[in-house]
Image (cartoon, rainbow, N blue to C red):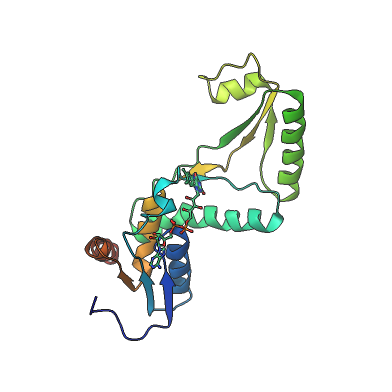
Length: 186
Ligand SMILES: Cc1cc2nc3c(=O)[nH]c(=O)nc-3n(C[C@H](O)[C@H](O)[C@H](O)COP(=O)(O)OP(=O)(O)OC[C@H]3O[C@@H](n4cnc5c(N)ncnc54)[C@H](O)[C@@H]3O)c2cc1C
């Protein structure tokens, strides 16, 4: 590839969600000469396989806060870029089918509340009202997290691409440029 820039303020290696996110956030900070190098195609690594679930609750307060930042970012990414991200905040259920699991779920709810996250403990019937296809014969209880969401992992990366000034990959180069053109025209 002879058309690579000879200088760059930052070079990000790897065009998965993490590399794209780094380049995106550098762009947000005003770094306009970032180069992202991808050896194959954007999102062709692990990101390609992701189901796209975006949960927030973790055992660490810092990671939970980081995921809160992701949720805030994904919520506004489509409006910011004009590109579809598949973002859908359906909420999520955690199910407990025995007493030990129910104890764990209740502890998780306490942790969630201490992190400022919404998590509601539900009876089996209340959970079924949210997801009527579910059988509840063996359900002890459930927890509902309204902010659990899903996003198309490949699309969220593409939406972040307009902030990457130069993206150099093999086959995806033209496609990425087209995305960037579409975004700047929007
Ligand atoms: C089946 C499955 C389901 C998942 N579901 C979810 C989910 O629902 N929610 C969730 O949050 N996470 C999920 N994950 C996890 C998530 O997919 C990964 O955490 C995430 O994609 C990792 O992103 P990454 O950018 O670190 O890695 P990658 O996506 O693997 O990106 C790394 C990139 O670097 C490139 N690269 C490597 N070496 C070089 C080099 N020398 N030069 C140039 N480029 C290079 C690769 O080609 C690749 O594109 C799932 C994972 C799997 C496998």
